[in-house]
Length: 332
Ligand code: SF4
Ligand code: MG
Image (cartoon, rainbow, N blue to C red; front, side, top):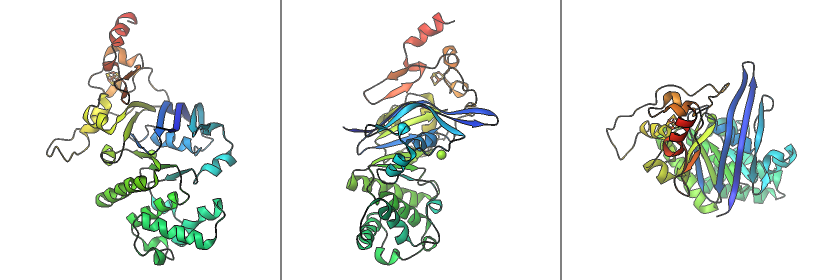
């Protein structure tokens, strides 16, 4: 399978009055063509910062990519000029955010907004652009597209608006779509429909998708692989099956226990006690130590090595590592 995106040892920090926040601390992630990778974790874990780094959307200052590379189809995005990145943004890589209203201009018709990207990046006639816009509205399931193109955002429901935003993101046929909490602002039934829509779009267009969410429940049906982030690090990655059925990191297990599951009705949901560490001065060892029911002495002192549990399943936890014993003995 072709690797479309390869993030290597990414470090991103923000300078604030209180000091430097180390939001992303050595993230490694890869994405293969045509797959959906979900990045999951609590707010502040670095998932949005990681995604925004891909598109060079980190406001600088205060933000800065301190270290690492982000290869998109073999080119390191961190080394490209702003002009080069702009030619990729919206064309090869598109992003969708949580609130569709911020992506739509209330004073312009849907048709104008949908075709804007095309007019900007491609030399095509307005007739062709309109036809493509109609095709896109059909693809995202908006009825009567020809009439609807003449309407304004306020004439659509929240779910419909998010469909329009998705259509806008897809009209230039990007190879990578990054969706950051795309269903969080929507009610549960509409959420399910939008997630279905992502799956359908992927089947029809082959687009690769990164889906960012704090809610593991959201990715249960559509993610091929899942990366769990905690305190600026990816602490476990695996296929959807591996993460849901054989999670190994205590944090991943905690997340799963705090998600309602359809197949386990009546089971009590257990929230994870405590809060993530302060990223002004992140701990030396495993950042989950203070909240981890399994924590050992070595955990607070030394960050665990990555253990490979299968070709697709990796975890950063001392419980999976034979060397934990040695470290406890030799470094005591
Ligand atoms: Fe818990 Fe230690 Fe594993 Fe961290 S390394 S998750 S503290 S057992
Ligand atoms: Mg976020």
